[in-house]
Image: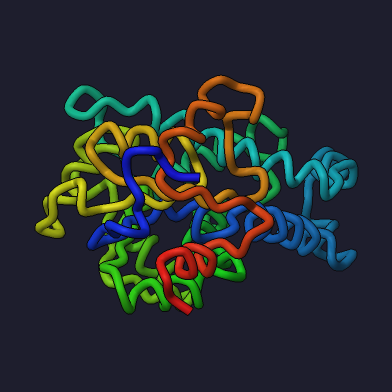
Length: 272
């Protein structure tokens, strides 16, 4: 569904900027699987298990795959709280790699697992966000869209993280833009306005592509066009909420989760 006053397929933008976590890459599956594997490795042999403190070993034995999925979600929730609460020039700058590391330390402590991993292991684990697997449609869809549009990330992830994701997933972005480039975090207006300016474009010539309606709402308030690509378990607003219902009226292109993601976006733009 598109807004009644503008048809994005008839008057397409010149550039597409993409949210990354949850929109381009499937963070939930990758992070949860990684956490499960790391925990299992600690008890993979009797000698390795014996290295653990008895109370840690007992605690670990009680955790299920569902618990690790909840741990992953809590880690993600820490990220959301951090980025939404950051106020440029009022709060000391911290990049996402640093946040992921510090929040992992905090979560392990809260889960009574602070003695499970060494400091070096925790630091290495925090970098799993550099190697998230893409949704199945992402690589092909992005490469296809890149033949017609400037394609750029517009993510809260830092530059080194985005570079690794782009290479790991063979995503083929023309340009990597991070909120860190503007010393702010989405949904701060300076991120969207700065991204458009960096591409030499007016905001109206850029469409934000995201699986999160609050991101798109913020982009739209800065003059961007909007493409919503629904992904499993990513949208915070529920269909019963007025904000969600209202979004149906202003989103320029709406891709349902049972459609083919970025491949469907390309199809709507007349590409095959």
